[in-house]
Length: 319
Image 1 (spheres, helix red, strand yellow):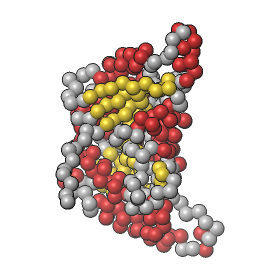
Image 2 (cartoon, helix red, strand yellow; image 1 turned 45 degrees about the horizontal axis):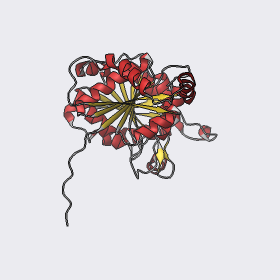
Image 3 (cartoon, one colour; image 1 turned 30 degrees about the vertical axis):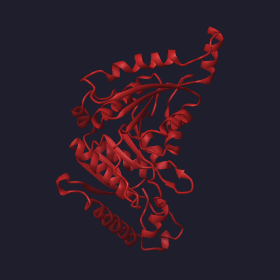
């Protein structure tokens, strides 16, 4: 017995809003992505429980969230202006609780989260030190983070200009191929070039003095170059992808490369394991702090092998 082919479902994009200028920029990116894919766009505001309780006490009526929903619609309305929106179903949702928990709960029925790394710092807040960090640690879907200074684009052509080039830092594990293929699809859609890079960290060992360090470094570089060549070989030649091996602190080298090569989008993997789920590594955390660029964070694919184990099997350095 064969199953009938299921119709393709429209993807859903979640855009958390904390009523800061930074979240307006994120909303503009979410709008264009939703329009490009014909997606459903969910704008989410999360109220602090203390504010909801204060509203109950001051008005004498139960808090329904209707006022916040209207405020949310008014706030994002300027960000959704521009060319007429096509094939987008926009909904406004309001939740009460801790922002990260509510965002992750809403994301269970979504395909992508678009959010700013920084926002307000008062009672109503969405800043990288807590909310965005936890979302990245626990997400099971990709997260596109926008820098706090990003005003956001109004048209796809503007996105091409803002991105300019895509940087794909890989740890040379089995998940690296997925990163490269996702970056390839984005590069094709935007018509921009991309660089695949691996950063070799300095060897720190008490036995370094006893080793022929130069030969070890040459071997590490040769292995990394061969692995990058294999990844590049999966990309059509017309896209002219570049391969780059760098040395030093991974986060600093990734951020430096992004600045030097004017890469406005970094596609990073979020390390994880089948047992514990997605976990944001220290490299990803620091890149988000150092690089004023868009960052697309990819959680591990279901049943993917842990990056650490794969890299150890291949004898390659991590980024």
